[in-house]
Amino acid sequence: MAAQSFPPPSSNLSSKVELSVSCSKLKNLDHFSKSDPAVFLYCRGREVEWTKVGRTELIENNLNPKFSTTFNMEYRFEEVQNLQFAVYDVDDKHHVDNIDKQQLLGTMECTLAEIVAAGVHLTKPLGLKGNPAGTITIQAEEVRNSEFVVYFELSATKLEKKDLFGKSDPYIEIAKAQEGGEFTVVYRSMPIMKTLSPRWPAFHMEMQTLCSGDWERTLQISVWDWNRSGNNELIGLTTTSLKDICPERGGTVLNLELTNPSPKSKKKSTGVLVFNSVKTVPRPTFVDYIKGGCQISLIVAVDFTGSNGSPSDASSLHYIGSAQDNQYLQAIKSVGSVLVPYDSDQMIPAFGFGAQVPSHFEVSHCFPLDLNTHKPEVYGVQGIVNAYQHAVHNVSLSGPTNFSSILDKAIKYASVRESQQSQGYFILLIITDGEISDMSETVDRIVAASTLPLSIVIVGVGGANFTNMEVLDGDDTPLKDHHGQQIARDIVQFVPFREVMEKNGPNGCVAKETLAEIPGQLMAFMKANNITPNPPVLKTGVSGQPLYSIRDKEDHEILLTIQVDLKYFADGT
Image 1 (cartoon, rainbow, N blue to C red):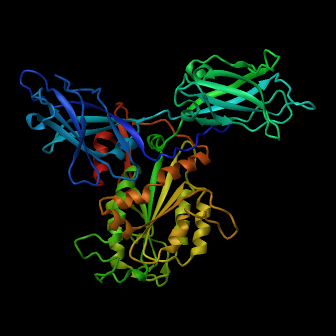
Image 2: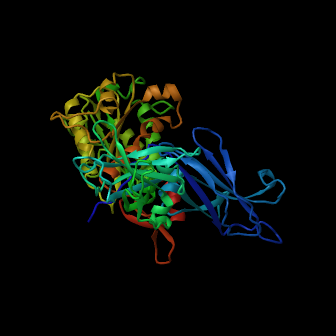
Image 3: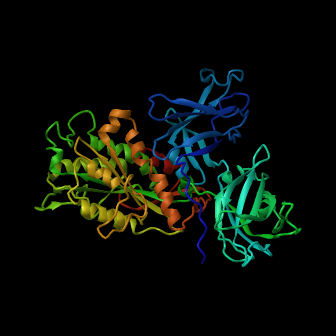
């Protein structure tokens, strides 16, 4: 089976999504008619207060409204974007935006990540003072701005011979018309040597680059004879538009005659340009993969080496006796709150390293965080927090700081999924306070992992020297293993916790700094393995109601309607 063509990933790692809203079984608060609902959307990021995004139109006398007004939002994977949908019965139609004059029908809170990860749509119950008040359904669709890549396969026949002692060496140029009528070259091929019937290698380019996103923009395609001296000679040219040559847009042009406008040219036709294949492919985005069912799985590793200080000492990085969370807990909660909603079962493998565990006399560089050797997975963010606190009180801090065993464990997890049908991606979060003792082994593991669906994010806590962490980040110099093999793609991101907190303050900035590169890294892996997004899939039960699969804390699969399931998905209990 031929590999699917795959456009390069977008450098823009955020996406605009359009949210459409409908409701069902709303409460009827009017005495002589039905309620007149409108939906108000509020968002809250780092801010304490809710900020109004906008509202839908008012639909009169309808308890099951489908609103035509949509909300456009910037979707950022690395941030927790809290949303509140408030449905009002509009009594004062002259002052719709004054909610004090309207009656609240119900509210629903979720995150934008939940909506995107739900696939086709998200349906949740509306609540009013703790009582059910109908349901609300949100559908997300990505807003694309000329997000197409155009793929070409071109050839030519019967080209005019330009070389005195041999055939021509033809190459092509594509230029787009500007507003003033001049043409700007947007593509130039390599020459095919000594032929009058060339078939150029397939190529692709952004539709924005090709024709500024305009299907009818005039394109000039010219064929030249390449000369080593640089005095290249025009063989012939023609004009067309993407609409005319693209069958997907109704184009019927398969070939065009080339002509040379020069007065010196004595031939009417100087060749025929053949469009063997012209097609447009929507650029896959991070949103496409998530909605297509790609599972993002978090793996957590916590440093328990002695340099953290005794947990009983208030100056220790592992001290948990104060009202404020220590840096380890802050990093776990900040990053976990972003990633866990993308994992359908929310069972998170969590490990510690650099400590002596109960009933063991040797230092372990990879032990289950909850000290359960039979099952290292814990449930949700709170499960990680509970396991971490349990470990703090039960292990003996030791050393040295070795990463290789943790990386071996992550590689084992990430070696499972990498197919078109079963798409998955793993993120290893390492929270550490110091220098790496096994730097060479760590680099070898990272280079080996760079071909797997895995990203490694390192949060450095405390004030130690993090020079080696910056080396692993590899932004300036790509990593190489001890055999000289270079890393296949960038998979490591290092963030110094204290610097980020001092610069930006709390409220999720650690997650933003740490996870900002994940969408690009995921798409780079998918591109390298010719894996395209799957269509959104929604499980349905016998009754046709939407179902969602989750697992309880005993690892039993439960199928629930989305209205019920995502309530638990949202609060992590």
